[in-house]
Amino acid sequence: MQKPITEIIRQRYSCRTYQDKPIDEGQQHLLLNFLGSKSAGPLGARVRFALVAATHRDRQSLKGLGTYGFIRGAVGFIAGAAERAPRDLEDYGYLMEHAVVLATDLGLGTCWLGGTFSRSGFAKKIAVTAKEVMPAVVVVGYIAGGSKFRDWIRKGAGSDLRFPWESLFFNERFGEPLTPERAGLYAEPLEMVRLAPSASNKQPWRIVRVGDVWHFFLQRTKGYGKGSLLFRLLHLADLQRVDMGIAMCHFELTVRELGLTGHWVIDEPDIEKPDEGTEYTVSWRRAAV
Ligand SMILES: Cc1cc2nc3c(=O)[nH]c(=O)nc-3n(C[C@H](O)[C@H](O)[C@H](O)COP(=O)(O)O)c2cc1C
Image (cartoon, rainbow, N blue to C red; front, side):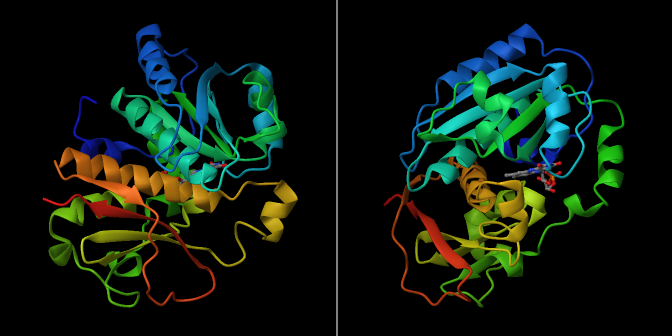
């Protein structure tokens, strides 16, 4: 990456209006090299990705997918497939977001699209098998002039909004907010989680620090996501688990850039969860110094 990760993350937004211009070969090459080098996520699921050029038909089929937002002029997509595994969607989100960060660093615009992709033309292009899932794809291309402002208006200005720290990050237990001052060196990685993209901007990530360990929880949005009428009707994947993988990616890339070391572990802490919609995902354990 050329720029600091914090700068890249601050620069990224969901771009929905693109120039009708194919991605430069050099940039395609960099993206393809990166995508080809990733075959498994940090939680062990096997994932593969491809860069696909968008045909006129793809653009039309996007309109029929029933996801919100309108993408104009998309020329390329990053599509992928994860082999079904306990944490396949988190790993998919993690690796795909890493590609988003790289594309942003290359000056490209991106937008995640969650949809019924497992049976779509996109799935056929990369021959998704019955053992795999394709919960989302990412549009990638050159940002059209004025796109950020137009997209902002179109999305009802809500997508720049993020929950405050006290709703997302906690010390030792839920209900005990963690301030940036108390987070110390980890304030920046947490802030980068806060700025992450999430399906419908629901920001379902919650993080509780217990000692040296950062525990990631999914706070399911009521009436949205897995099991909801909307998701059943549209056959959407459990996108909030993809959001968790995205948050893990922002956290880890920032932590590593700060020179802090650690690794992901599955080690649910014995703390009370706020409600039945709160699910443990994973923990980041600081390496012993
Ligand atoms: C898993 C996932 C699925 C998404 N699906 C869509 C989609 O189908 N259509 C769309 O326009 N935006 C989609 N988005 C983009 C979100 O709406 C966007 O990330 C959020 O509103 C925050 O805005 P920002 O990305 O500009 O910061 C998706 C984002 C994620 C992470």
